[in-house]
Length: 193
Image (cartoon, rainbow, N blue to C red; front, side, top):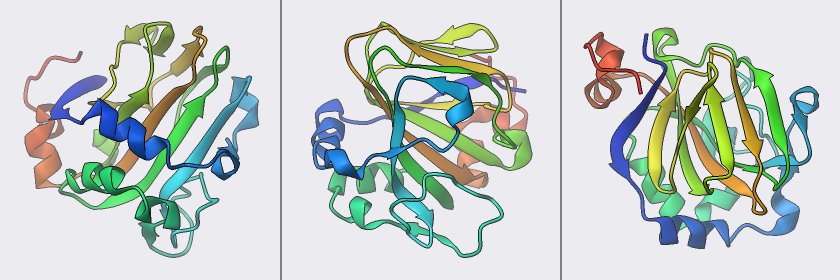
């Protein structure tokens, strides 16, 4: 079982941040799981069930297909980033953890390669004072990188910086392309990072 893996993809930091600047302050929605964070954690849906712009929760039981939101339609580079994933995509969201905020340790439900799905984090804005821990091990992610994380495992985030942390979070279905880009998805002996 792989816990984390840096994909061989890299996205342009300036173009990521230029698209982020197209999101208006009033388009950010508070995160639905208020029990697990302190401070301010919010998001913007880029893909959701039926393309609902205010739906942050990628509810697996929701009725309807995942579709692009109107917000994604104006963000050309985010569209390019999503198109780089040659597989069926479900949700895509920007998640912002404000300066000084933190997300308590928790586990997500059925978000691992072994479940036939994956979640990728692409940092859009971050810095060294943002600390992401997966099973008590710090994962250092830099702007423009793409990381698979097995979020069935305990994880937490601490933003000790003076700036907000924003990640593009992408959920999708494992297929042959995913198996080719993440070796552990096919059982290869790739080292967990």
